[in-house]
Amino acid sequence: MLKEFRVCYTLDDDIKWGKISKTSSIQKDDVLQEILKRIERCDFFIVKGDSNPFILNTSKVRYIRIFDEKTKADHSLL
Image: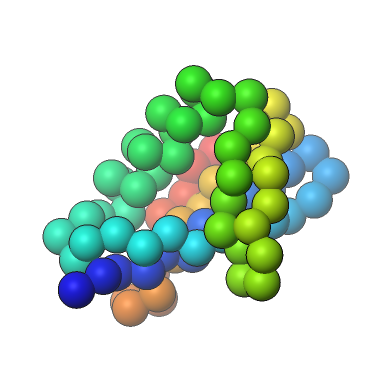
């Protein structure tokens, strides 16, 4: 079974929303760590958005907030 997370990326001049699907045993902290590692390694990466995927410039990311779709709880990082 998959668990779906919504990720809000606050950028310098925009807000972007993405979706991440993981196994049900994955927690929000695990998703956050995965995103942070990707930001650290890459200058750009592709995010699955609501309608279309988009390219995210990691140098523009200022804040990340993760919502667990099942519980509607969130986890934030400055």
